[in-house]
Length: 218
Image (cartoon, rainbow, N blue to C red; front, side, top):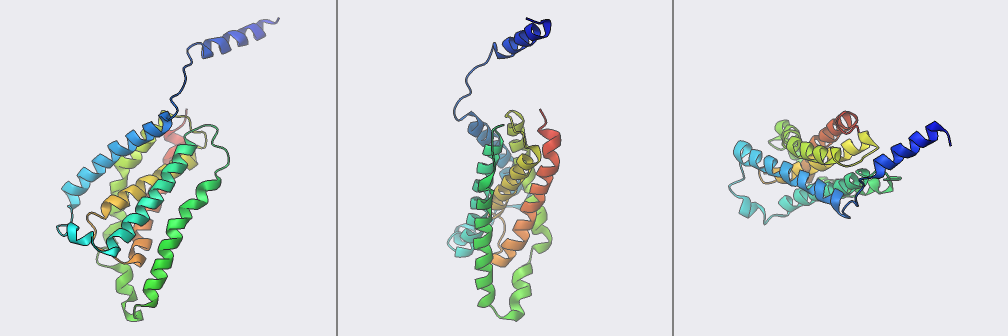
């Protein structure tokens, strides 16, 4: 037996000597921890910085509130599922990514129906609302703690498609931040949410894609 073969066998033995079984739900648990920690920071920043709507109880009885909350939460859950899959080195082909288009398509349909029953003279007002200048920026900034928590969790896992993992983590962070932002925002137009909420979410996904190869390298 050659000396190189012996050295290789010794290396394999040393690397495998202290292996232990990974808990079945370990990756999911770690992502949840990162998400909860980041979400708590975001919620505190929202409450202390922007403030919670004083009429939140009344707002929660309207369909507009639940339209934007469900859009953001559904997109966030799909993005979290994709991130969890990408946290494993054997993630395979990501055929399920198309599912994230479902809430976007449904909201787009709601926006088209909204436009159809609204006079054209009101379309611009409906699109811009009263907070379009700050909406996407607020979602982006509120998402940063959540993105940090998810990237922290991913660093302790084993993603191999680093840019995609960072992008889905950013998408999840942006969508959860948008969901929490509903506690402050009084806009109810589907067209507004589709444009400005989504813009903020996409910006965070882009940031995640940029950070992924740098932060998640192992």
